[in-house]
Length: 252
Image (cartoon, rainbow, N blue to C red; front, top):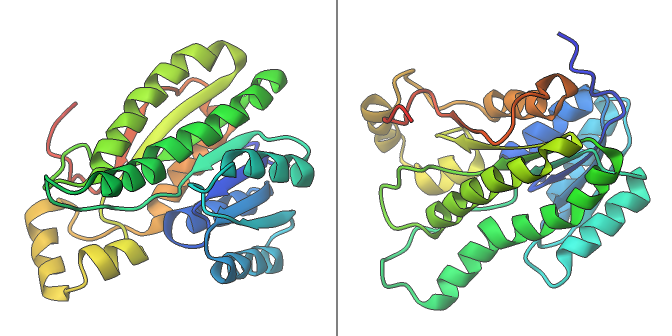
């Protein structure tokens, strides 16, 4: 299947590791031109070097915290300068924030800013460019809708789902699709080192919760993200799709 992504101009946030990195590499394999965004400069540059060595595409990096002041404007301006326009926005920056029910407001504000507000503000800056082009794709990498504990990220990602669904209806007539992908347990730094560092606990969790019997790889989600970014996914919008090996228990 030809995805018809050659020369599409893409922004990928959270691109220095994990899911963002995997998506960026697969977009490069489809000969997209990329702006890669993340806080950590060194690993971000390593992703750039890997892509440049392997694929024939233009890659630029911007080391910035997506929650910092005017980050949305800075990312947009940098991308326009490097790419000329923006066709695809992959919102992959984020992080789990497990906490207690009575956590201080500052903790909630930080988690909501990272996992919802920064994403919303950047998308709001990019949508007018896509509207002018009469074409665009926005893919949000979100999280579980079945929280096992109090986690700021769960609340923030649920906000993303509702906001993205509403936005998808408003921009659809302009050739823009908005979709969200909810990852399950994938072999990323965040999952292996923070959520499930103990191998015995990991095996127990898999046995009790994941029907396919293993943690997935970042590429298992990245393939879907790249497909949704393509012109051939034109009739899919406003969706929340789970990539979790069957972990989600409910049918809706």
